[in-house]
Length: 240
Image (cartoon, rainbow, N blue to C red; front, side, top):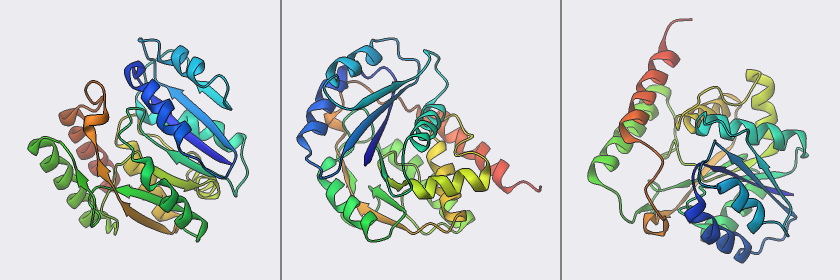
């Protein structure tokens, strides 16, 4: 079984295109779509249910905006209760910027024994189609800092687009008594570091980020996310 976990926050303008991309991808496994809504006010929950009504799907959320970390955590916990260790979780953006053209490669690597496969704009062959110089600088600087201080070998730290083995998330949940504690976009770094602490086998696949496919602006606020990086750094490096 493949579970697609898709955090959603006011993405009604993108969901129709996302439905087209997801249904055009033909996987060999049984698929279940999990939409974890983070308090959308634009009808995203209702639209997702309407678009995927003939598919196997679940829409989570109580109408309260708590941040992407909380949305991911709710989705992961639901999947762990409804899956088997050998099942797979694919996490993607709701705004169509995750390139499903590389998904087969990512899934093949997962079947070869990798616990976590990352789509990486920083790996050789990856890149940004259209992103501001300031955002590129902040992202690259944060990535370098955390790779240096935490001895992280991978190049991309915060991408939503990943393939997880369910058994890895079970190990994380058992070791840390939970999967995610951070509410903001820093949650993806938290899961990555916890995966490393659980001796996960991790590999990256290069991806071109096509931001022109997104309708509207990104929900990530650069300065707010940068501050979350520094706060997480201070917390992680502070004496116990």
